[in-house]
Image 1 (cartoon, rainbow, N blue to C red):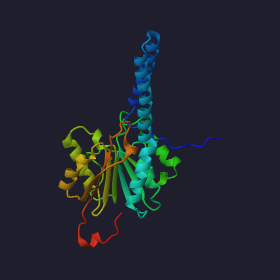
Image 2 (cartoon, helix red, strand yellow; image 1 turned 90 degrees about the horizontal axis):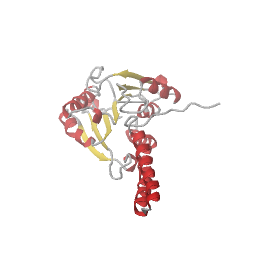
Image 3 (tube, rainbow, N blue to C red; image 1 turned 120 degrees about the vertical axis):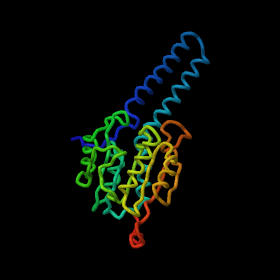
Image 4 (tube, rainbow, N blue to C red; image 1 turned 135 degrees about the vertical axis):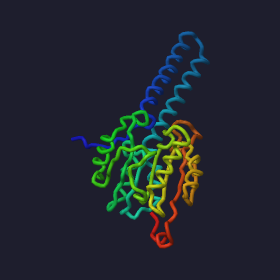
Length: 254
């Protein structure tokens, strides 16, 4: 009897899969053409390109799957959560980060907010996120809300921790991205940490600082986030909302 397994899709929607297939097929066809025409150099270049494209595809799918899970495991371990926090995952998609956080919260809960567009992730839907949470045994600690990151339907200071993976870059326009980042700060409780992973997340540091965040830091992530392009790393921005008063700052950080 087959055991159900969580499936988190491929980042970037359905464009990447046919792209890799078409390019690989074209290169292999070029190799066959070169053999028929007696052009060994062209054939060699086509075969080399086909091998390189396989490597690019392998790296892309790794970064979108095991690589992303591995990176977020490290980031969540760094947070050293107590286990009773209320965490918000902005742009939760099919729940990779959401579920990883929920496993660390036996007495807490995670809220995932998204609009679930297929162009952002294959099979992206609320139902897919719900299924993955259930399969992973954390369904009772997960709540899903359909919400635009620029207008979160939560009261101020609702969450102990805010997380986000590959979401803000999908919002067009720097002003709209800044609006979404300010919303993330608004719903974060005083003293709470924020972790955002994105393409060029360093762009968000100045917005978070202007929104009042402290301990703002930018890190370049490692090869696990290449997404098929060696040297192209995703970045992480860390921030913390200042405590409202000295008494709150004495509370152990999340």
